[in-house]
Length: 355
Ligand code: NAD
Image 1 (spheres, rainbow, N blue to C red):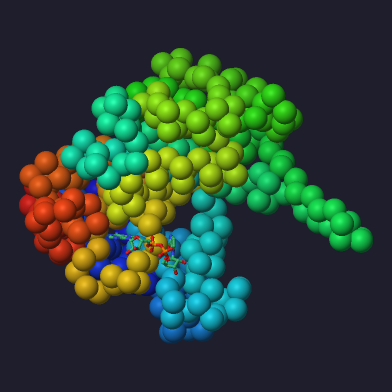
Image 2: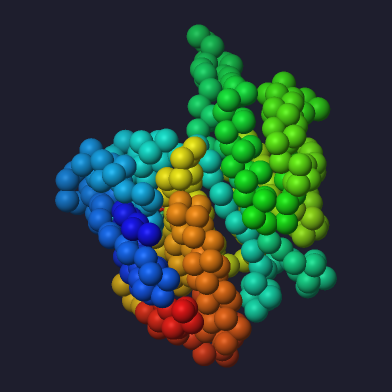
């Protein structure tokens, strides 16, 4: 297969970790007979430095012309004084909205080798944590009508969803569940909110097209509790924008290792943007310390969701697991006394376990 990938290294550790993901992708391509062409795209602080704005039209066009985007991270103290609309994060938001990405996948996995990093008790972790939060990204209360009364004493925000918006993200969740443990939990507040009742109706109707997938429902307050009480009960957790914003952060923190978690932002076709959930970690940029695994796992998700290369994606994931089993640790995931490796060595160790 020929793959055209836009690389957005961004700022801070972005270039360090994207370089390692490319190393691993290149190895997969040669082992499995694919070819990859890369187009480098500026976004965030680096774009502010070069062009005065966090995302140029040209950069967005280059991203649009690719089959998928792999992003490092944007931002850093250097641009803290930059006014709102020109801040580095606007580059990321501009990419997400300019590319029409309405669906966000955030896996939360606890690797047995790294269980000491999780704030959860061993008795909970041993049941296994491997869940996927599927969050709606372009609708709901963050995008609904909002305002203030004339006297400024009242304010309102509106949560609106259409059946079409719900159906398209629910389909993504069911499809993802088919490749996992085949269970979708719709998280909502259907005892109070009319929009949640529309979600339940629409998702239940769609469930008929996925008879192999079990669907259940949970109120968001209970879900927040269950995520720390028994996360093993979740496979795919499907939810609207604001609930997903909160629950995906909660889910990632229970794993305790920010340098390990990937994310994917998708739309109806196969196009997607893939990135680690962590930021640009300016404190460790350029020092060969950053953990590249979240970005390497993001590249695996890209192969799975944008190119349907399941075998190749799984090869990356098992190379990561094997490196962890063999004691390969960057500083952030090492416990006291453990030997650590740098960013480049970590990337090479994973690359060496493929093919
Ligand atoms: P951060 O995620 O960059 O860093 C938090 C802590 O985790 C730091 O101590 C950092 O060293 C560590 N860390 C993060 N990623 C790591 C990795 N791969 N390996 C080892 N350690 C890692 O969050 P922050 O410090 O709040 O933000 C720093 C900058 O990143 C800010 O400018 C912020 O706006 C930006 N940011 C960008 C994104 C993004 O691009 N998606 C997300 C969050 C924050």
